Length: 189
Image (cartoon, rainbow, N blue to C red; front, side):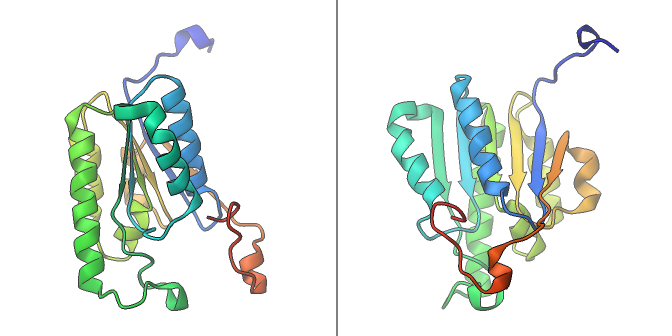
């Protein structure tokens, strides 16, 4: 089949998942590609509440892109992640934060104002029971028909695969954390 026999979709749903590193980094790259194409982008953060490099980067470039780049950080930190879990944050506080962040993502996806809505770490929120699988289904089906959607995080639910257009699983081959080394700023966060 020749390329001229292919067509394009008005919008797509992408997933970056898996145990390997690079899901958020891939979504930041997608954001750069979309902004470089003149698109409007909403970047919605579901888990990371602390200052990480991608948040600093987005804040630095926001003045350049003005209303074409919306950033919302709604997470309370890691939930149910052993000694990496957020301290002094109850499950109910995590759940409320996830639900408020979801409402922001849903509003952005439905509005038609954004060409791309990135929901970073939303899969973690679903896997941790802070959101429901039905919330993801609703987000996908309720989005504006011209709005592409990117869902990142570990443990994307296999039963949702039929609802997406592109799914990439990051597979860890090796990571220094397994040898008891902490994350490196600028590389891991």
